[in-house]
Length: 198
Image (cartoon, rainbow, N blue to C red):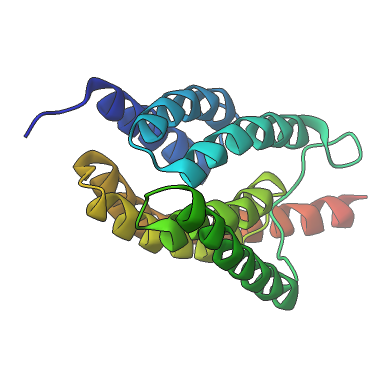
């Protein structure tokens, strides 16, 4: 099997970014921007059009996430919190409807036969990344949906490094949920302790 050096680089850099995200490190953002740039070139060359657009989107939202994690919550670093789950489910539903509409355009104007899966990874990733940037715990189950779609997409495109990466990300989402939930509880205890001292 020939290994595309750019695909290998994108895989390794993106892997580091996601692990840093689980650990809530600010370094996830500059590392993620670098990985996203390489990822863009690889998926563009493969003709996976919606995923190419997604990488451009990821650059902007990672810059936003970097700013928000530094000072976006009224001048202080934001804490992990729970999102309104009805809103999250509705957002995923709307994203899937948008993917269905987008897949029609991809089918009409390109020869790509995985248009719905490609469009779904784009639209649901938007929701997942927004939740991550805002430090909502529910980012992790939404990433599970993205990961399943991405495994199917990259497997069918015979991009085996990316397929393996998203298999790892599937299991990583459970680790991310567990780590963030533990950190959220620790932050809540710390906050109660600070209130008691005050």
